Image 1 (cartoon, rainbow, N blue to C red):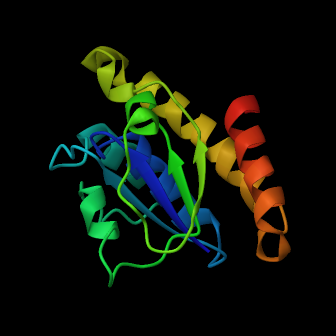
Image 2 (spheres, helix red, strand yellow; image 1 turned 180 degrees about the vertical axis):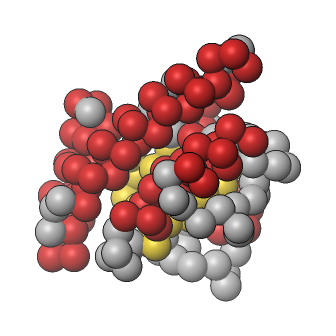
Length: 158
């Protein structure tokens, strides 16, 4: 299963969830992240936190969602937005017919630098619980409607 995680800047929340999925899914999913208006660099606190948690961040980069709307891009099964702006934007047409879900999280990059550690850890913990909830399901054998309902529930309850 391919999952695309979207946020406007693709520097914090979407990077965190992409890495959480790829670090914990044990090959069950492959996650990617992108932004509608990418910052061009990953937030340094995202890299610091993910590195401290043992994630491989060597290939982490801020990228445009346009990379995933072209013919040779991986076909997405699920598109998850993690910020309100990306959820409300008109997204490109994705190859295939991916399910869409919104898993909104406060932007840790908007916190003052003195509060970054707490803000990024909070975002990481919320996104981690949501990823764990999804991965606890038999996603490989679920029908689209059932998976969509679970994605929505996870985003609104955890």
